[in-house]
Length: 104
Image 1 (tube, rainbow, N blue to C red):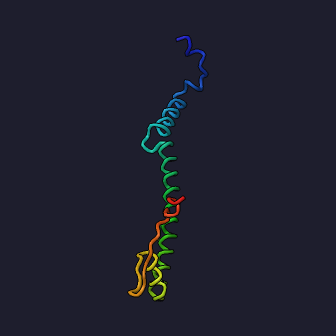
Image 2 (image 1 turned 90 degrees about the vertical axis):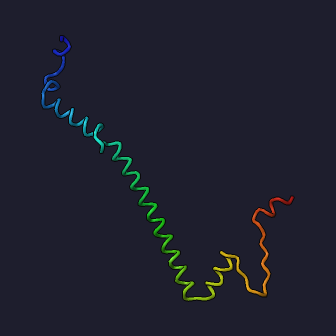
Image 3 (image 1 turned 135 degrees about the vertical axis):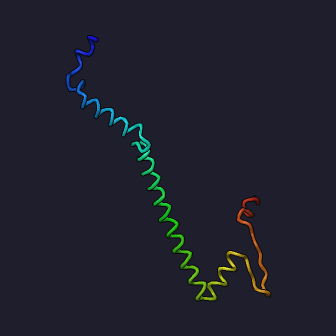
């Protein structure tokens, strides 16, 4: 027990020991420790960015829907581009994007 005589008195204090044990438990051993809190904070930031992206997408889709409801020309353009619809007297030719890559 000779090594205990070289330890400063403030390190042997019961208040210091209790505070140190409390700090270790709160910072590292609790279910809401520092590492978990930083992970949750990072996840929250990612979710907020994702929320903003989807909110912008919803607003853009809503604006496009409003255009289609009010303008029949926009509705026809959307049907032609997205669903490859055509009129009865028209022919539709679909050229794949990688078609030109195959020819040398």
